Structures are given as structure tokens and as C-alpha cells.
Image (cartoon, rainbow, N blue to C red; front, side, top):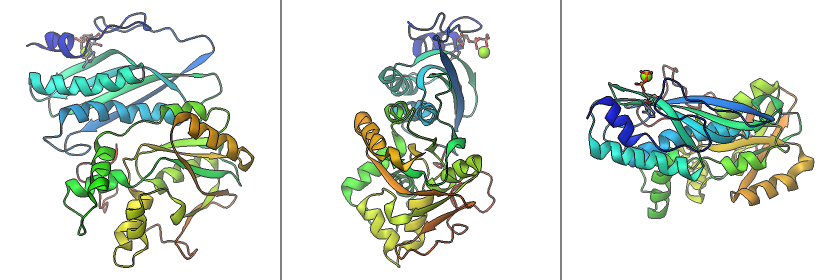
Length: 336
Ligand code: ADP
Ligand code: MG
């Protein structure tokens, strides 16, 4: 199978919306009237974002999911994707499963694959996602205002538990149901597209949580020139993980998983308190729980309070950073 047969067999699906899809030197698209294009790209590298031997179908899903999550964060409707990949070999079973996972998610969110690039090399994927958002309606990181409520969708920390399972890091057994949930969160995150769309005209700022809650909240604070005051007990996590974050025996890592877990692909957003009811309604519309975790403040800096209301030492509980020399989470499986 040569490169072109491979592209034709696994990565060429018919397009309806695009003017021209896979097969020429460029794809052609026509943006809808009154819409801005929202464009983002994300890479996944073997050994950093996924482990060698990762299930190809789940990997196909996740490769697209982490990119769709960026569309969700700006309130854009995803429309097109480009898929660039390096593969060590052309294993038909592997490719078939990867494409199945990728296109199942693409079809679910009505995304057309319009091009890409294929080369031999260490397994790596890079998707460019193109979405549409009405002019001026994109949810940016820069819009948070003092007194806004800070919200988080779904539940965080589960993907970090999944990573801990894969790394055999947990000294305590995980309940079976949570184990399954944690592995699903890690391998098959579901981008919050519906919520992002429902939050247009409601959220003042938004970001998707890929590198851990506090780190990503920090991006909103920095871009918005504000601070925040958050209570750790308000952060939506499983009851099991909440108990670990409170128990003095396990609090060191329990808290880290809650505030800095990473790879959740939930949305964190802010909205004026007067819009609480609209936020809850947006969550209902999108079929996802939304939880208030704290407030934006006018004083720079992020405060996360423990169960006694005391500020936690966030230096010690840092969000994952790919370039932090002392990062505890720099092995495979960490955030995209
Ligand atoms: P070029 O030589 O112009 O870079 P390629 O030979 O790399 O073109 O690709 C041929 C066509 O197949 C192009 O339309 C390209 O966008 C598409 N393509 C290549 N790899 C992929 C892929 N992995 N998924 C989807 N489309 C792809
Ligand atoms: Mg090319």
C-alpha cells in the first residue's frame, strides 16, 4: 500500500459542505455569511501524549476530541478538519481502527476531513480544526470581569486518575465504577461543543481544561487582568476523589489531582452573577452539569481555599507544564 492508496482507503470521506475535499493541493471552503472562522491545531506525540501500544480506535477519537475541545472553548461550531500524521508503518488493522475512532467522532459533530499530510516516522498526529462562530461572538480568555462567577462543566480529575491507573501510581484501590470512568475520561474525552454554543452571549470568558484546572484558570486571569478566589470543595470531582483531597493521608496527591489533573477537556468559563440562571439553562440544553467554583476578583492572583477556607500553596500543586524541568507529570499520557 503506497501513501496515496493509504490516504484514499482510510482518510478520504465524501464532503458535502466543503467546496473541495481531499485529493488536490488545497481544499476549498467558503465561510458562511456573517461567520468568522475559528482555527486551531494540536499535536499528539507517542511517548508524550499517548503510550506506545495505545488502542488505535481510542487514539483516533482522542486525536480529534482534543482539537474539537478548542472549538468548544470559543463557542465555535466545528466544520472542517485537516489530519497530518506520521506512522512507523502502514498496518491495515491499526489504520482501520484509528480511522474508525476518528471518523465516528467527526460524523457525530458533523466535521468534514478536507485534507492532511501523511509521512513515515515516529507515531505523531496533528489535527487542524476549523469552526465557525458568528462575528464578534467568540468566547475569549480575555473577557472575565471582577465579581463574575467561575464555572466548570462536568467533572475534573477523572482523566488524571486514569493516567495514574495506567502508570500504576495509585497506592489505594479505585472503586470499579470509578476505574472505568477514569479510563474513559483519559482515552475518550467528549468535547463540550454543545455547551460552548449554548454559552454564546452568556459567558464572559472561557477556556477548555487541558493542562489542569488552576493552570487553565490562570490563563483566563492573565488575559483578563483579574484574579480569582476558588474553593477546592466546590470543584466538581467524584466523591471518592473529594474524600482523598480532604483525608490528610492522601491530601498531597488528592489535591493535586483536583486542582491540576489535566486532560479533562471540560470547559471553565466565567459569567456575571446576574446570568446564573442562563448558565444553568445552557448546561441543561447541552446535557452537562455546570458547577460554580468561585468568583473573579479585582486583585491579581489565584487563591484556592482548602476545606477550612485557608489558601492552598499552589506553587506546590502546580498545573502540568510541558517545559517545567521538575514537572511530576512529564511522562506519557499528560495533557495535550
Ligand atoms: P501534497 O504533495 O500536495 O502535499 P499530498 O500528497 O501530501 O499532497 O496529499 C494528497 C492529498 O491527500 C491532499 O489533498 C492532502 O490534503 C490529502 N491528505 C494527505 N494525507 C492525509 C490524511 N492523513 N488525511 C486526510 N487527507 C490527507
Ligand atoms: Mg503533502
